[in-house]
Image (cartoon, rainbow, N blue to C red; front, side):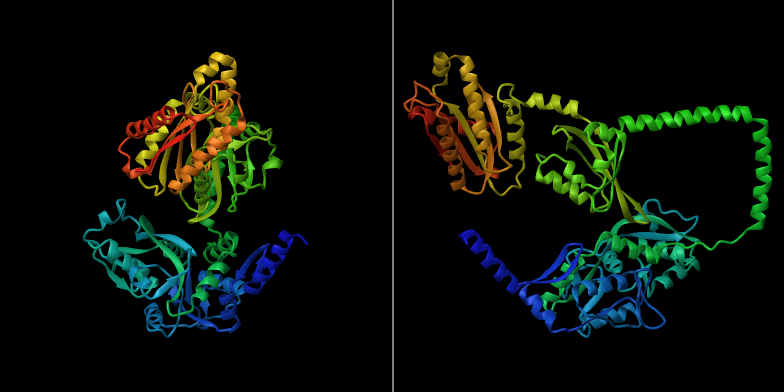
Length: 594
């Protein structure tokens, strides 16, 4: 057994002693650390309270049982975590809050985050649900400007709720009163005892669409939102919230959506309205007479409109690139335009991750923004580089937007415009023709952009590089060999990069520049040594150098970005250091770390 295999064997055994796979679902696993495993082995149940009247999220049914969306989600967490959760019924939300505050019950099923609640509660990492707060009013009453239109109106909201706290903290000028339950709020509006109810959108839609408050409406969507999170008291073992977080990570979006639709789907009672049927028959008879009279004319119009529609669809498929994604960001469908640009067939694309067709050269920041947008309701726009089947690529301006139903996202649409030609022109404008690295123009742009960004805590490092005695090289070996030497030097400079934040430029002739962000001065010195060593390994013959091979001199400035006044100043510092290096015998680097 070699050393590597022995190391793996020992490590895996040590790891197995301190961790345990608790639950597996489609190859996803919850792994417990030693402390979490010990707490779970005690088989202690966790009591929790909930809002007994908060449909559709949760409520207490006739048997005093926890019911609704949150109840079903907690059951899922219980299955995946092996924690025994026990619902403690109460008469009101106010009583539930008091039980946790006083320490009689350790956990809330869900609750919004506020400054006061953070003092005694620990919240799960990510919300189970996010929904905006809305203004509910009677039909015929408009509040298009939101709270601006509510002056002298009777505003109500729920007592002891997250929105009550938010209004007190973030909308101090708004005067409002509170009611005990959501049902009290909707009845107060219906009975004209209040003008506006401030409540979350999901509850509003449930009461209006399902519980029959159809004489009320959502009049305005506010910028305030409700993020529902499980929360436990801070005096509980931290392993409890840790296990809950890990278990929630196993719950798929489909499972959450299925539960949401289960409790919010609108059912319609089918009844025959005979007066309406009679009306339809009369109208239908008149339409038939009209159609008979105008048959030929209508046929001609239909053919014309059908042709226009078919032409529009054909043009869309040909010129507008379109992709649909599921909730896991896998491709659901693509149109002909995308297949034509990418070289893939529809069968090859459907089912694969959308990220997999994005070129790996795209920055990590861009990739992360795309991934984040697929989890949020925001629209994402950017110019993205896509991989083609033949190994090539194409650029497309991409708009990625979620499609939702009652605030629940069910898929994503990506609409693209091919910008490859435009991108190539832009690339030519910033690229050196001989070496294919960035040119002096782009150097000025990048240098200025980096200096303006004062947020990066790392050290800014500028290296100006000049090939020693290169005029003599050209005179001795000819300009064609000189060009070949420049290309070799360029390739070596690029391969010597330490991270993705490094840029390489040809400033002109035999002069180059490197811009990089480094952790400390030691790393800057290591970069220059690595560059010189790699260039020496090329062993490009040069009779007029002391070493008899091509060498370089370097001027290196390394400092905090906020200490740099402007790009001209820092460039002059590096250029002066380069001059000193050349004046003192060449084939060396001079540094400035001030």
